[in-house]
Every structure is written in structure tokens, then in C-alpha cells.
Image (cartoon, rainbow, N blue to C red; front, side, top):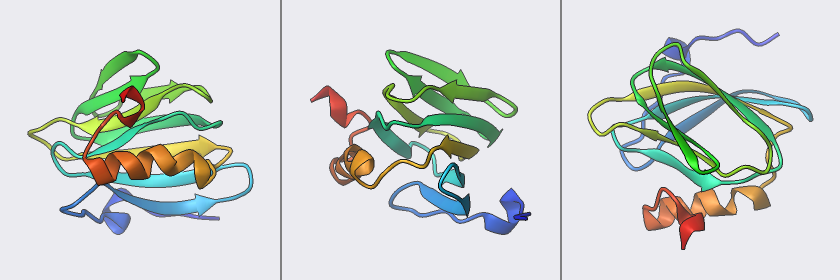
Length: 126
């Protein structure tokens, strides 16, 4: 059994969002995400579902062509193969639990790496 808390795992990075993996199996990956104001997970479309629960802060979650404003207590689920991304508002830190099933592949995260390198929330829009 894995048991932890946002306080125990908290890790911020000045350069990009911080994803602290707390559990992984062949079927599921669980991450605590920590975002400084304005930081993001770039838009990408892996073949996995994701459930996002906002612990603190505010931001937006992209689900296909829609953007959802999120705040503490919100839960957003994005289906596999849909464009998705997460971005903290510019004036607050964001902490969220992200559960993906199954875990995305390394190749599916290439748009994430590109977006972070180019500081582009939506590298799929090029």
C-alpha cells in the first residue's frame, strides 16, 4: 500500500511543473503535480484516461477544444486520445493529483517535452 500526502511530497521547481510519482503499475500511474504560477503540462493526447483532482490553487484544464477553470475540490476527467493539458493561473500555485490509466508511454509524452522546451502550453497547435 502507498500512503502519502501533498505536504510530504511537495516539491516545486522554478523552471517547470514538478510531477512527483507516488505510485505506478502496468494499469495506473498516480502523480502529485506542483505548479508555480503560470507553469503548465503542455497539451498532448496520450492513449490513457486521466482524472485530475485539484488540491489547492486555481488554473485550467484543457479537454479537447474546451478549457475548464478549476479550483480546490474540482475533479476533471479527460478520456484517452483527447488533447489535454494543465496550467496554473498566473497568480497562484496549483497542486493537483493526476491519475492516468494506463500510464502514458515515453513516446506519447514527446509533445510535453517539446512544449516545455519551447515554453508553449499548446505545442499541438503549431
